[in-house]
Every structure is written in structure tokens, then in C-alpha cells.
Amino acid sequence: MAGPVRGLGTVVISAFGLLGLPEQALPLGYALFGLVLAGAAVDCWSGLTGRAPALSLGCAVVRVVAVCACQEWTGGGRGLWALNVLTTTAITLQWEWPPAVTVPVTAGLLAVDLAVAGGEDIGTLVPRLVFECLLARLGFVLLRRSGRTVDEQHRRRSVVARAEALSSARHRREREYLALLHDTAASTFLMVAVGGKDADPAEVAAYARRDLAILTGAAGGATARDSPVDLPASLRGLLDRDRPAVEFRDTGEAIPVPASVALAFVRAVHEALVNVERHARVDAAVLRVGREGNAVVVLVEDDGVGFAPEEVAVTRRGVRCSIVERVAAVGGHATVVSRPGRGTRVRLVWPGD
Image (tube, rainbow, N blue to C red):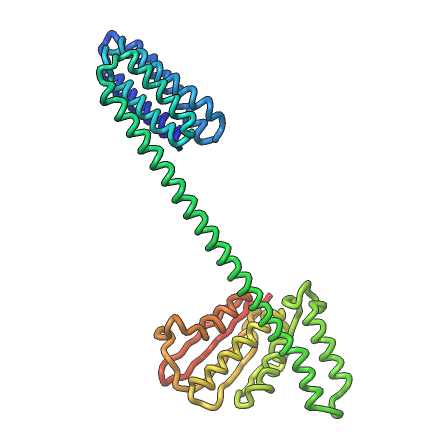
């Protein structure tokens, strides 16, 4: 932005300088103002596009030399117009070029001004210009150094955040896959182990084929998350293994859903039933599964002590993460309605096709 700042700054300075000229010097003043406008256009174009910085430097030098050289015809003596254009140019050059360029250029421009206007003010002009240039250079160096520090800290935080996100996603996928494995192959193995010789080989083979299709994604999708799973059967399997006190109610029809949806619902129901056991102070709950139009709806209800959801601390993540966010991650939504002394009702909805 050094070029645009210099260009616009010299335009404003030149506008005020033009207003202070005597009438006989106006033609020359207008010519100088046109030169300033042209140089400002080059400064803005070069600064905003990053192209031809040397052209912008050349225009800045020509502009200062022209305004300083014409002081004798624009009022005589040292003019504020020339002085302010000179200092503005010297300061902004510190933001664009190294000292190897700015020192000789600034010294040359100062020499032109002193040669035209005289050296009476050399004792104040030179220290002022040097001080302003040093401050501009120091400010630029400190700003860029602090900017690099901030960028490096931001880069490190981004790397850490990305690594944490990848690790969290990897662990989540691993947990989901292990849970899916538990609800498919492990369930079939358990059925064989419990049934022993009484297990129907055809039924076991059918379950094994279904499990393999779900785990490999061969049941209609590119991945296991796309494979169709019967949701009531998955929920019933959960209850048969872990929750004998839960009353299961369904319509008796198969409700196929993607494996990822079935897994999310099974995990969410599991969390809801764990909460019943731990907090509701009752021994039974009701689990319902069915359809409402195209939507799949699962309800977990109990008549326990209940709680006030709005008073749950933000550090308690069971309902929010294990139920609400888990179902939302597969395109559904979950609501938890409860009041002290009036039980709890967890409603899980997936919109279906």
C-alpha cells in the first residue's frame, strides 16, 4: 500500500499547494498538478497490481524534482508544497525499497531541494528528514517482524488444529467401525456360541452374508456407511444383548437405512438407555421405532425422575455429543424433552429418502 498512500498523499498536498499559488503561477501549478495526478495513477496501479515498482519509483523521483525545481516560479523561497511532497515520498519509499536504494534517492532529492531553495534551513531540514525516514524504516521493520511472528503462530496453531481434527476423525471412524463390527459379525458369533448345535446353519449363513456385505460395502454402496441395514433388527439386537428391562415396540416391518444411520441410532439409543440406568432411578424404559411418512422415528421414553435440560452444564457432553450431534452427523435430528419428576423422552428422526 506504500504506492497508493504516496500517490494519494501527494495529490492532497498538491491540491492545497495549488490553492496557495499566486495568480500568475497558476498555469505552472496546473501543469505540476497534472504531473502529480499522473504519478499517483502509476503509484496506485503499481501498488495494487505489484507490477513495475521501478516505474513507480521513477515517477516519484520525477514528481519531487519537478515540484522542488519550480519553487522559484511558484512563490519563491522554500514552499510547503515541495517540502511536504519531498518528505512524503522519502517516508513511503522506506516501506518499499531497501536502504541501498532509499538512502541515495532521498539524498539526491534533498540535494535538489537545497540547490533550488537555498541552504538556509539545512540545519533543521536535514535532521527532520533523517528522523522521519528512520522512524518510517523502524516502524516498517517492526510491523513486518511482528506480522511474521503472528503468521508463524497462526501456522503452528493451524497445524496443531488440523492434526487434532484428523486424529479425532480417525478415532471416531475407528470407534464407529468397531461398533458396527460389534453389531454385525460379533453379534452373529455370539448367536452361534449361544445356540451351539441348535443354531440353524442356513440362518447363520444368511447373517454372515449380511454382516460381510455391511462391513465391505458390497450391499449397495461404495463403503460400509452406504450399505442398507434393518434398523429395528439392529435395535432389537442391542436390547437382546444389553437391555432386558427395555420394552421394544415396532410395527413388525423392516426399515432399511444406511449403515451409518443405523450405527448412529444404535449408539444414540445406547447412550439414552445408559442415562436411564444411571440417572432415571427406574428399572424399565420403552423403545419405539417406526415411520412417520418417509421419516424414520425412534423414541426412548421412561417415567423416571427427569431433569431440566437447560440446566445441564456445558461440560456434560453425553446428551449433546452422544445423542444430538451423533444423529445430526448423519442428516437427522434429535430432541430431548424432560422435566423434573415427569420422566424423559428422547426422539430421534431421520428424514429417510
